[in-house]
Length: 172
Image (tube, rainbow, N blue to C red; front, side, top):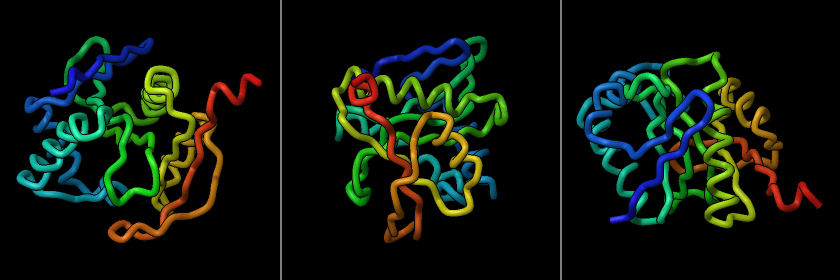
């Protein structure tokens, strides 16, 4: 089993997902707020989804982290690296269910971006954003990603592809 690293930012901790996160996950993924991220789901579906998130780390060697604030270990979101077999390429993704409007998604996303490019040596990454998800478009742009076409996912339908810059190429 892979050791999941912990990342920290000025205000946040990105830590390994755990069973204790199921309550906050289920509350969010059971709501209509998840229309752009595969929900809503019932509690059992959310449990399986949390297990999938944890298993992704072993399957790919990277994954998504549970996001908490530095002063409270309660899950407020899910941010990180994602590459299921039906995705066109590796992605940096985010779902925040608490603290919206505080810049947490882009702050955590930048930490995931740095990990992908600086630690894992990625040379490219995307973020897939469902059409109509204006909040995620703002996060992608805040992270420096640019629109790079569309992708039609077999389950989620038409999505915009936002391409993240490779820091090594930007420095040249």
